[in-house]
Amino acid sequence: MLTAGTGGGETPTHAEPYGRKPTALPHHTPDVAIVGAGPTGLMAAEIAAAAGLRVAVFDHTPTPARKLLLAGRGGLNLTHSEPLDRFLPRYGAAEPLFRRLLAGFSPDDLRAWAAGLGIETFVGSSGRVFPVQMKASTLVRAWLRRLDGLGVTLHSRHDWTGWDAAGNLTLRHGDETVTVAPRATLLALGGASWPRTGSDGGWVPRLEALGVGIAPLVPSNMGFEVPWSDHLRERFAGQPVKSVGLSVIDRAGAGRRLKGEFVITDTGIEGGAVYALSAPLRDAIAAEGWATLTLDLLPDMTEAELVKRLRRRGAESLSTFLKKSLSLTGPRAALLREFAPAADLTDPVALARQIKALSVVLTGVRPIERAISSAGGVRLSELDDALMLTRRPGLFLAGEMLDWEAPTGGYLLQGCFAMGVAAGKGMVEWLGIKTSEPD
Image (cartoon, rainbow, N blue to C red; front, side, top):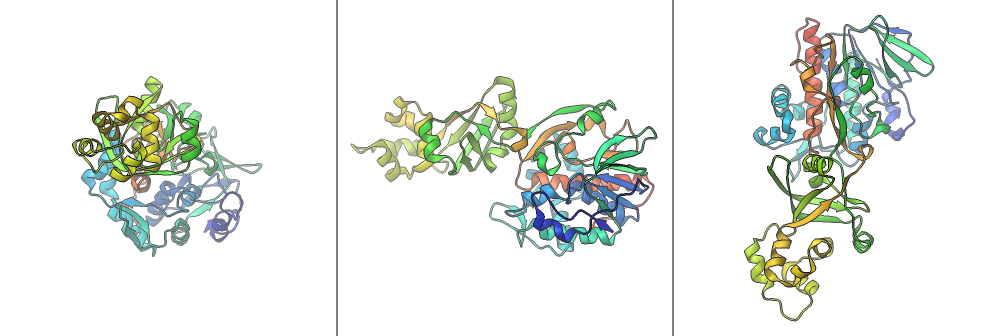
């Protein structure tokens, strides 16, 4: 039976229906122990329990799926509807891994799984997929009921502390030390973003002590710092910049471009379009101390069309002309004045060039604690195809603990779910039991 804690923390309204406080036992002997009750860990628990294994899930927080609940308060973006030939490159260097993982649990499979929980989904105008009710809590409650029916036990407020001399898992529950002697173990402890949800990277030294290769944890899907003028910060902080093109040249010389929107903040910029380009921008700042983000303020017009219109300007002021002739107002016009050289504002050809390719210098990366996700972690070369640690048979790793990253928009969460399915199957097969698909 699920025995999660009953409250506290940032989401008390979500916690109450999840069950009673756990009764801490001095020793557990499940077939499978899963440390981490996020989407990766819970999906692996479902796969293993559906195969008939006794599964115990342990989590540091008072309630399961806390990060998922917090992220889904404004609508839970489960996955994306675009074809796999466009979907898979979103995983960058880890595309080969996710080509295999999504073959086992695709975006369509994720939507079918949600439907099996009674959660219907829809495709938004951007191609992103959401539950019709737009609530993470509804999905989590239905999921926990299914896991309860499969016999999964959930133990909250259990901090993983490592292994004892006999190789058993050790966890701290209040003042008590709990030992667990499973036949297979999955660690799905997350990365280092949103530490209040339990993802604090505290597992790194324990795995390093085993000799596991770990890439440094760095922020991903995060904002960047821009040294705004006082005028722009005071007038436009908090305002969105919509329908612009964004592009960056990565360190290998490859260009990446997209159309979207972002938000001006007190310290710089953030938002979906920025997150999608965050990896090459972050890497450039790490190497050079700065990065250039190029903005196309009017992506639906060509530079030649702009020059033609700008040459028609008469005696009216630039701001009036830009507003009447190009509908270039508000934060977009402010950004043009902030970064375009003054001499270019009076030359139609130079001004058109600035509107189409405005260079914004980013001078820093927002802290990992404020990032949506993190990159880095256990190097993929440390794992076999079943996500088992090659140097410690029977120990599986998945989720944001591993060295991969993906942008928001459904790609990150899809990857976590697919990893949970793969890890669950891997543990079942390691224990010599035939696997079945999640409902």
